[in-house]
Amino acid sequence: MKKIIAFLLCIVLTASMFCMSANAANTSTTITFNITLPYALVSDAHLSFGGSINSWAASDSAWYATKVSDKSYTLTKTLDSSSVGTTISYKWTVQVDGESSSGWLHPETTATGGYVENRSYTIKSGANIVNDTVGGFQNFSSSGSSGAESSVTGGTLDIVTLTMSQFSDNRTRNIRIWLPNGYNSKDTSKKYPVVYMHDGQNCFDWVTSFSGEWKADESVTNFIQKDGYGGCILVGVDNGGTQRFSELSPSGWTTSALGKNYITSQTGDLYAAFIVNTVIPYVNSHYNTKTGNANTMIAGSSMGGVMSFYMATKYPSVFGAAMVFSPALQLFDDNSTSNYISSLDSSHMRQPKLYIYAGGKLPADLNGSDAGTAYDETLITPYVNFLNSKLTANGYSATKIQTKIDLSQTHSESAWSVYFPIAFQWLWLTSNETYVVGDADNNGTVTLKDTTILQKYLAKLISLSDIEILSADVDESKTVNLKDVTAIQKYLANINTGYDIGNTFFSA
Image (cartoon, rainbow, N blue to C red; front, side, top):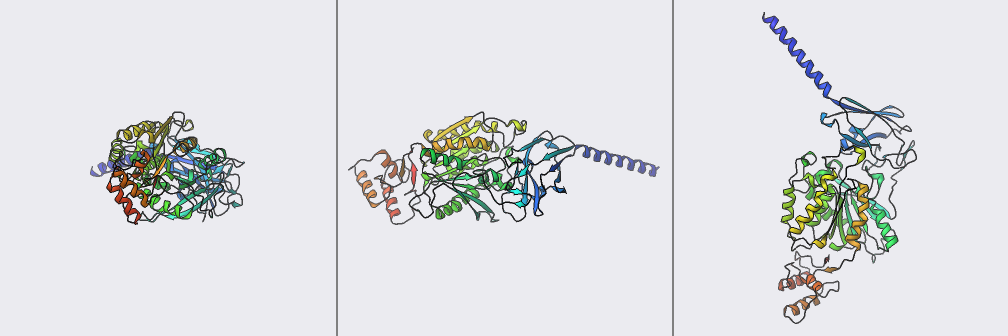
């Protein structure tokens, strides 16, 4: 009898395991891509997938397709069941052994070499089979890579690699430095203001971008050619791929429930310090730059918009202007953002100018799959007014903030390319009166004459204009006092005062 019971239990357990296995099989979701190429790839080249389901990490060898024949490749991946119903976006790229790039040097193109928008596919339960035909690849042919061509318009682009010593792993990062037409390294009499931009791959060159570009180089070139603008230097700091969300997250900010899906660590302070203490000194020492707050801008979108806002207000002595485009603040707790703004001594800080922009539309080609994600522009739209109201309530000057909401625009480089020249013009090309801290006579330099002027002013022997008082208020106490005089004297004696003496700022 015991043997019979044991036998029956064995049958039941076996059946249960079979059912569990069958259920698991029924709920598993796979996607198989079958890709047809226009020509065979050379032996050191690999067909690679870059898309929303692998953080656009096209250089990740785990996403290399397997060769079936000279012009046929396949790639199969098992997906989490939660992916069912979502629409992914992606592109095919070629990765070449030994070729240093962001992974997007050879994205797919049309058969004639034209730009290709991201592909999209909505995941279904079970087995998904996708058949893709590729027209060609940028800078690549049947004979192999044709080098690092570029879609940069006007000027020249230098690319250097700097070590991020602020991080314990000493990671490195490509820095893209765009110089306008007419830039002459030997002519040190001609100096240029500088814009520092996050996601450098996407700023100037669609060849290195997975989703289009800001066209920042085109915009500045247009201002130079049509408006007689003297030009500026654009510096794009490449993002860290899978490290992007962490590096662009301000340290100590509390993430929201949505943010926890994207942000695994917060190393934003280290990233910010890298730009301020490594990138900016490098650029200033190797190029003809105008230094000072009024000549230095920070710009970014999405997580880069969050970091631009954070860096401008954390380092107001460094950045005089910031483009805060589509800031992905839905990834952070609103109270945390409010608390950070409340911690700013806005009434005394020399406030950077802020252009805060957001769109308000989901992209039609993704069938609403961006809804409720880090890329949902409709979730970002309310944060334009959120930031404006919180900042002004905390003493930030309303004249230093410009806001814009365009409900027709999506969360995309194409939208940011539209508003780059608009923001640039308001931040830098409109009439901006500047002053030099400590320059009481407003002649552009700080000298002993300025201390004499202040002493006479304190003795009520002379009066000062509003801009002269603003310059003389070294300690930002809203009054001119002997402490300001002493600070200027120490500055002239090459003693560090901790103040911004000699730095140039916008007066309004």
